[in-house]
Length: 463
Image (cartoon, rainbow, N blue to C red):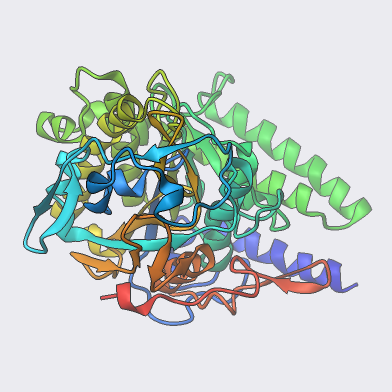
């Protein structure tokens, strides 16, 4: 009885939302999603763009310089510090960074020569140099970063955000994944809705062409298509009347309606040719390097989606012809290719959001699932390192031009202001106006949440 009544109220709410052209507009300004709570406190950010660096970039080659590695380059790490077991246990010598660091901006934050364009935006960044993870293997670490659990089947960050706050638009999904070509280990479950209603799962777009398949109607007229959709709705309603409310049916009805509305919205969103030449160049769409063009299109489409009210957008990495940021060998070429693909587009995104007045209300998060070791795997690679790595955030209420936490003198383990993945999630939700301890879903006999039973807001990175 309780289940049917609860679902019935949900259906009433759905019917009302379907009549509202600005579905989720209330959510955009603080109204509730299906969770019913809306904002717990004033939000600093309305939207999130998650720049997922698949494979684990090396912190000591990007944003956390360690001069001691130069001094002891080629030495046995076991004689210098305690070496923990690694993923492949093929440990070589201490490996200095092939790239030079230089201070940039008014903040003077050092950035590797891997990121000359992002370095121009360093005064926008809040670096967290003391991130840790509980998992040293890609699949478990990916689930953990995306869902707060190393186990498969939990709701992703984007699903939780939309569940709590609602979508910001009616004609696009609230949670979008723009796939540059590399779905991470763990697959689509990294973007799933888990035990939340299925309508909250991430919708995967491509950064070119139509974006999604079958976006153009096959019926000769819009009226004919509307009639067919209404017939499907009636058939679904017969099932509801006979068997009662079920999430699969309610989500299907919602998805049909969103897909119908997307026919007009998606072509407009994907039409990046309408952007000025200077904007296209800023994002790297005119680059000679194809992965840069791909990621540039992803970043530009993400900005256009933010303008349309999409609540949470994740960008996956493009294929650079080798591996992700997972350089177990040939570190120099692998990291160089991956950085070349994303550097200019990310800087273009930050600059464009700033000049359009969108950065203050858009939280941009750059993160991989873990970092890399300060010693070599074999001769010229780095193994996985979950004990200390770097992520950064920009806009959306974070403290610009700041550094929080630190790793040891080798860049190996977090030793100051240790930040767990649950803490990162709690901070992201806080900036979105959500108390992570109060955004819950009853499942398996207890109130579940993104941060499980952990997580603390890292207040020192908030402006």
